[in-house]
Figure 1 (spheres, rainbow, N blue to C red):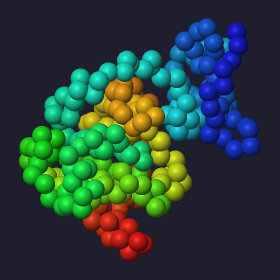
Figure 2: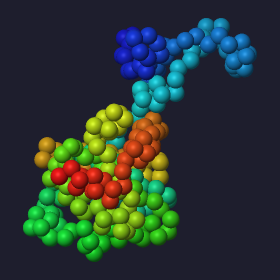
Figure 3: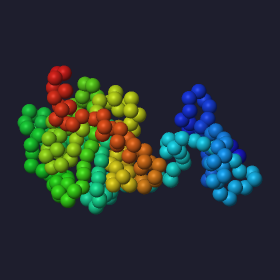
Length: 246
């Protein structure tokens, strides 16, 4: 049976590496043979034909085969994840603009030079205020181009209305996000358990989300969250940075 290369975390083409054995549900692992006597005596139920290899945890996290993705569903069908959550909801925003923003009433007022940073809370912000009041934490990191696009500048102007209700908003330059190896797609990570991955068309319209509980996908999202949150800058501070460069 043919082997399908899945990925490697090694340099120079040597091990460790993962392969999928096509036509089966098995994976072949290439790595350094385990030779430590103290470890070998602790292995259980060893058959004569078995051997053991060492591989980094990152290899399995990044490249292990995952569950089949769920169907693409309208965001409205998944919105309950952001109201029924237990402790955290975190969003990564990667796009250069969103069609929903451009169609919104605040966008028209912003284009006319009016204040859109201190609007009364809408339904989304009221939900965030209610959730944070009971101890839930909302946060997001927005990836921004240099210079920021029109859509990114609009959201930066609107950020205080999010922050006011407890939605912690931070910003990260796209060049830094690429250096960190962050995903290039939008998602919500809910309770470090559910991943809601967005899909968009070429005009920035939301097509829907794919919901996943796959441990490898969720773990990768958690790692992306932690890296992005550590390096990102709070919205107010970032706005000052952008203003100083204009």
